Length: 55
Image (tube, rainbow, N blue to C red; front, side):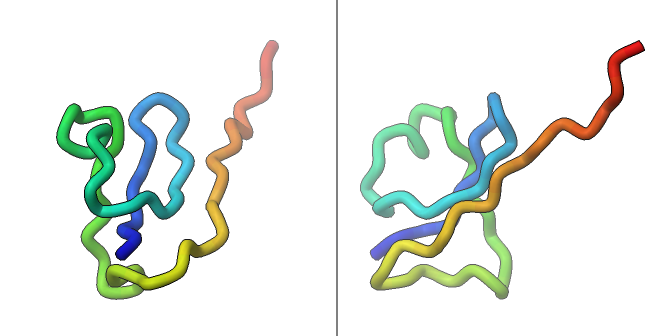
């Protein structure tokens, strides 16, 4: 099964196998949301884009 996670460094959200060691190591944060239950197939990623303008 795949679980929805957020990358701490980039903010991107995507599916990884629930046995992925990066969840345990703290690289990824498990997103517990009713909209993203565990899935048999990986879903499309959601990229986090920094919209701040540089001066």
